[in-house]
Every structure is written in structure tokens, then in C-alpha cells.
Length: 232
Image (tube, rainbow, N blue to C red; front, top):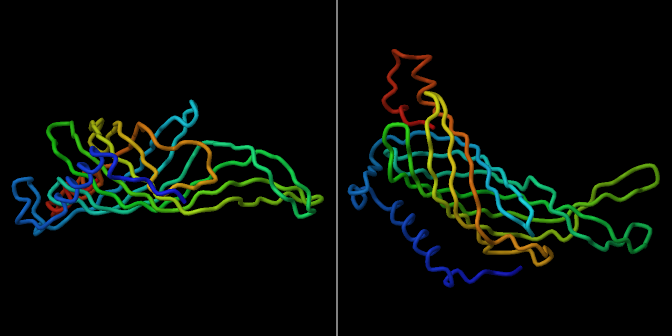
């Protein structure tokens, strides 16, 4: 596994250190509008990140859930996976002992640690800076004929670590949901040496935002929803 030297990326260090500051005690962050004494609310989101892998558009999807503090800071966890067919030519030894060259599909699965600071939120617009760390595995899958059966197999499985830093803009389309878009950078901190494609580079992100607090208030208008007004 190849480990990326993060200190070669000053902008990345600034983003990480900035988000670390946001996660300190409430007394130190009152100027940022964050008060950890207030009851946090729940957020949920689905997003897709797009990038170019050898001049071809590839995407990863992710589901995230967590807590939002003072409508300013989100901290959560999630799960992400590669959508597109990223294919490499591989030579494998079959169960019959034959060397065979075939196309193998790259698969990536990662758990996500997520942080997002919202620095503007007025009217229907919201601007934020998400940072997410993905930890998981990548491997190739291929199919081998076993007489009348076809068996799916894994090849070159290794652990990986991926860091995404983006700037996001969100527009509330309707009362219950909104759409987000943004751009940033993806860096492979720990890489699978068996993957020839370069996965580092710029990314473009898209999200579907569901405002659960507004849905709750619409169905239960007489309930006390002060603490749920920012659930997303």
C-alpha cells in the first residue's frame, strides 16, 4: 500500500485544521455560532461525487447520517461505493491451472467519517465546506467458468484510505427538499498498488437534501418542533 505524503498539500492541511477547530469546545467557538450545549439535530443525505479516471467519467455514491450542532456543524458517519465500470486487463490462474488474461472490474467499498461546516445559511441558499475520510478496501472482480457454472471471484484486495475536501452550495427547491452541488479534490492517502488508474484529482459533487424537520412540522404542526427545525 502506498501512503501519500499529506504535508505536500498545504491547502489540504488548512482544510483539515480548520474543521478540527470547528469541533473544539463550545466556549471556544461561540464566535462561529456553535454552541454544543444546545440539543443537536439529526441529518441524513445521499450524494454522488464525479471524477475523471483516465479521461472517463466515474462516480461514487454515499449515504451519510449524523448530528448537526447549532445549524452550523455536521458530524457523522456513512458508507460509500464506486458506481462505474473501471476495468483493467488482468492475468489470473484459473482453478484448472491455466493462465488467462481477462477484464476485471474495480470495486471500492468504504466507511465514511464526515465533517461539514456551514458558513452561510440565509433564505433558500446555504454554503458549506465538507471534509470526509473514507476507510475501506478495493479489489477487482472477475467471472470464471466452472463447467456449466460461472463463479464470481475477487483479485488483489487491499485496504485503502481516501480524503475528499469540497465546497458545496445548496438551494432549497421546495419546503421539504433541496439540491446541492460543489467541487473539490480527492486524495488517496492509502492506495491499492494493484490499481493502475490514478484516482487522485478534482471531484464534482451532487446531493439530494431532505429536510426532515419540515416534514415533521407539516404532519405534526402542534408538536413541539423547536429542536427538530434543522433536521436534514
